Length: 275
Ligand code: MN
Image (tube, rainbow, N blue to C red; front, top):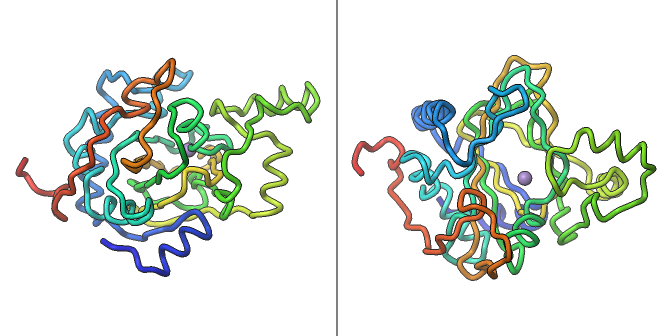
């Protein structure tokens, strides 16, 4: 599925693009069933919340499960992503299942994915692309991903750890809501929002949100709604942007080391029983 030149321009200008109803209900059902099955397995990339039972995230889903192994190779994702990174082949840097259950306080603080990719994983540039596949409807109630459109033009932005503009008490209060290591400070977020604003792309299950890894994003808790919000987050990287080895590499499920270009599967890959 090729993006039009208008869609590519929107992505370049805004740093994101929503593709509504990309996958059909049968494909979504297959993925949702497999996501729930993975929750019951003991996996190295599984992160449980402090309550000891709620699954927050499963990293490396494409390494553990046939359906997600196929999803990351699906033409509906690979073709647009290859266009985005400049018609180059891509490999998987990371593929995670991200769970935000009904009435749960799961949230993600404001951050840039590229900060992790470049600082922790040795990626030379931010020439990667994120594809978020909605396995549930994403609406205004269940904690949609919030993005600052155009903020990817800023490049890498210093996170809170490198800033001291807030008082000790403010820092302490704000840090209570830190859910990502490289969370941006309140001052930085305020300045960026004044410049770029905030959008919350929403859509039916099966929709795909493409965004630039330097586009600032986060999401609020789903504490008020009875709607689950499960998404698959896939970070594709160009084979022309392979990381430089770092001293303490993160595990394979967080930072993929298989740099072979992904082979594209057929359109019916998720529903086919072959393979
Ligand atoms: Mn992120």
